[in-house]
Length: 463
Ligand SMILES: Nc1nc2c(ncn2[C@@H]2O[C@H](COP(=O)(O)OP(=O)(O)OP(=O)(O)O)[C@@H](O)[C@H]2O)c(=O)[nH]1
Ligand SMILES: [Mg+2]
Image (tube, rainbow, N blue to C red; front, side):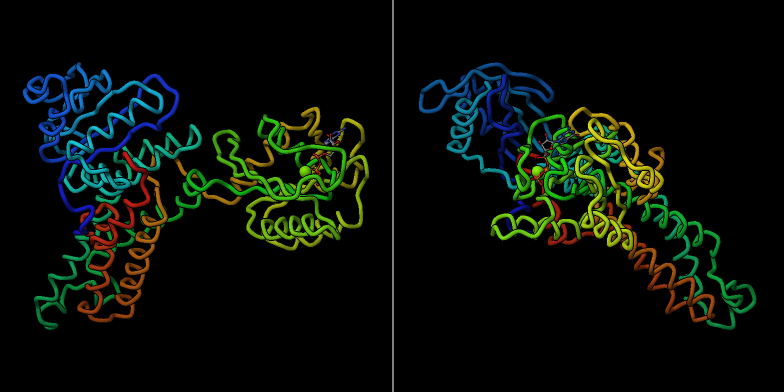
């Protein structure tokens, strides 16, 4: 285990973001944490003798000075989040009180926790599996209500259960194959399915494969709740891109003026469209410009368009369709990325019928007219690119899990293909074992120090 994450020394971290608020929560955990905390508490014996899941009221004291009046929740191993002796110290909010308490704790001997160290310890102490540890991080970063619900489903163990069930079936297939390895060819020739181009437990293997594939596909959809769906607003200068950006954000974030070439650098913000987190980007108007800043802005716009998962292309209704608009739309239509053509400024103009026929949407970024059609079009563009996941069923929660499910799928498919070609079981069995191990890595049953460190270091401090 790594030198950092491996110990059980007393650690501490802020569980809340310091700032103007009623309370600040500081978390402590580790061997001897309760005794150590008592050394900076006004009534040490009260803490020392406190049983698990109780509250103690008093003062944090350092060098005979009262630092802050606090309430301390005491948890005793193994009944705590980490599985160790732990304390949650509720201090007064704001910047100063929590900071001073933290200093006192560090002086007493607590070490500052590393990112994700509390959850790491919870995992090491068998409190949650890796898939649920990942969902903790997912939950604290959820940007929309739907994202929260998906994270909670995984936190409750839906994915862990599914993975364990699939793994159990795979182990059955594997042991079915391994039994034959112990016998000679002659002994098994009479009843082995293998002779017919099948694995000994072919039906179970096929069902496992189908369930793994379903999980793998679920990531297309789940990914969006974590990374967002990148929608880029583009169009000629003055088309109303920044106005549309502000309308969708419901906030005056991007500067709007009547002068073409206002937006230079791109601006990004998250918006929730019916629970789908959209990373919305406002860009510089596309045109050739001699101005170096505007030119650089246009180049950045073009780069962003390459990465976009959806383009909202605005036509300036006050100007009408220009040759540049036609060229852009023609160029993009040849690509697989979805494109929504929007006729803007419909409050002072009427969309021509040929655009209507081409499924363009008539909107006014100024008055909000047509926004319902626009939202509906954005939602169907997202849905068209993802396989809808039924929330009742298990779905993947990280790219790491997706990679491992794919490893298992590939190994299993290969095992089935080898069986079909009537290859011997001793070359098939290792593939089945590989699939079982990949699933064990998802839950953390099979893990190595570097995998764990890589994963937990992405967590926030205090989690
Ligand atoms: N009447 C009307 N005016 C609009 C509408 N949308 C934008 N405008 C006006 O058009 C002008 C340009 O709007 P912006 O949102 O700055 O346009 P932009 O595409 O971001 O422009 P650049 O950043 O320069 O590329 C401003 O004067 C807006 O008030 C609309 O729907 N109706
Ligand atoms: Mg702009």
